[in-house]
Length: 423
Image (tube, rainbow, N blue to C red; front, top):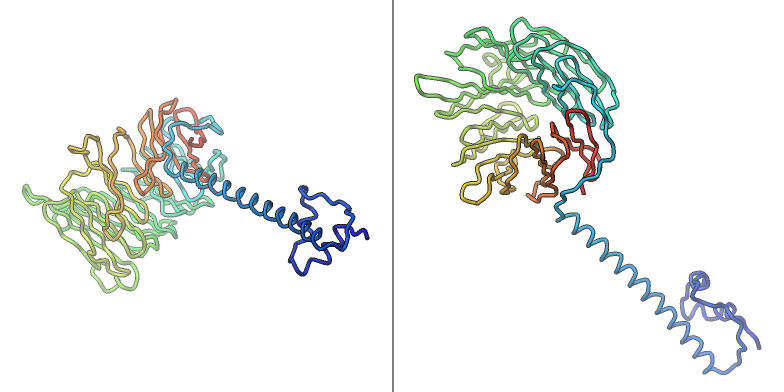
């Protein structure tokens, strides 16, 4: 009798566990009508052919998947170890601001500021908000999505968040330094001849605390820092005694832990023959003081204490940091390279070191990438020391900023902000 192959499939489905829909929809299978007999040998030969075809389809799929895996693995390996030197410009925004305008990362946006005012813009220079002012020498401190802009040796202070102006006020004395915390409180160092004031304000200018210091008592303040929660403050002072110098680092707590302490001071460190020109908080309980001979990590949620000090034999040329890592640049010495770059974590452990030769004007840590540039050329390194890009730019570079997207950057030049993708 005549039996169509489909009917035969139904009879054999339980024995061979076939997926009928998959086999019938496969373009490599032809559905034909056979003259079937009760001859067992003929039936066996037919099923042998079906099994061979199944094996062929399985092997073909396995080979295809294997080739796809090899392709993706190869592409990933290439991108991981590849050092690019070319780039593609995806957009160019003409600048109509003054030449002194600076760009700074600000959460998911950028602050574009000058002596005339500030604007919050996205990577395509679309303005979210803007504020005008008049300052001689504006400088900025950013904590997350909060920023303070103050006038160096002036008296104006403006506080912003991602929604715009949060508060503004004027001080009674010239400003030397200003730092901001997440909620908008501001610490300011004010100069008054031989007297220095370290004052603490809310965003509207209400004085929260003040600390009067003299050069004879504490020394001259070199730098200051606020914890992100605005509770703790650190100040690095330089002391001079005859021809000897020393460093005095003081920690203040404006919460309950410091209320019973004189001037809210809860800790200090004194070091002879060393300066600490830079100090910053990594988080609410970790601070780092960069010294002329290395760095010191402080730890403590209420009263920070010295946790780890790392000393260097070489002179520090540059420093850079984010919330979790501190980077240093030294002379390359006898290596045959111009520079040696080292990165440490907040535990004081050296996590990377790399020699390089680019004569740079700026080095920063942005979104887990180390960015270096001069007027003609820029380079990008990963935190493991791998160089992912180094190439020349067609116009003089003023800044290079990492933006959202795979290998995407914004290059600031004198007349444009260029969005590029690295090759």
